[in-house]
Image 1: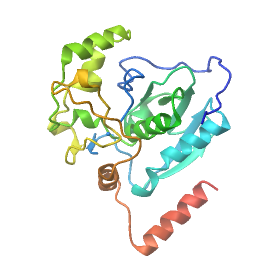
Image 2: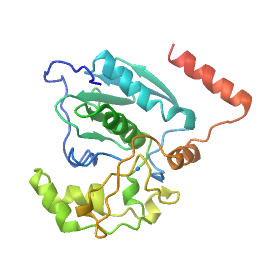
Image 3: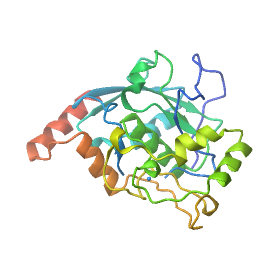
Length: 254
């Protein structure tokens, strides 16, 4: 399956690729993968309606992005409304020239002046990888951080190998530290038990890990992801609660 892409042209707003955009994918060879690390200061208000702008996308790309964002929807009390205007709370742009992606964390998106994007999705690669990419980045947009940087993760990285690979890709040591190697401090994040299968966890090649055992990438939300996001945005799971949520979602996206 191939996702149709737009002809290449420069968007009306600049894309970011700086330290101001701290959450980004690694090199294309390292496909995104992995439950529960969140910045409690950057989660959205409970029961919010989030307007999500889909920019510079074909209709097929919009459909694909909506479908994968909505994998999170049943597990939160938030409501997602997709719009074509560039003034959404979360503004997602397609990049047809890369398999990389990045996103602002949670409400950090509110600090970005409109219409500048708050998330970029690279559409190069297999559909399953693009799906995982969207789910991962939208996890960031909900306030989640990298699972492989969980304060209690047991991974032992081959730092120099990672630095060398990053350098070969034209990236910097601080990016490897910031996105992969450094653990997050316990007092700055809310966590559940470490989950290697989380969509918020990167997949890693054997050469990056001291035990030589690669970590495969996830392509969908883990059960831990679902439980953790529910703990951040608790849903009413009664019959009437579910009925009300379904009705509100239908009205928002009518």
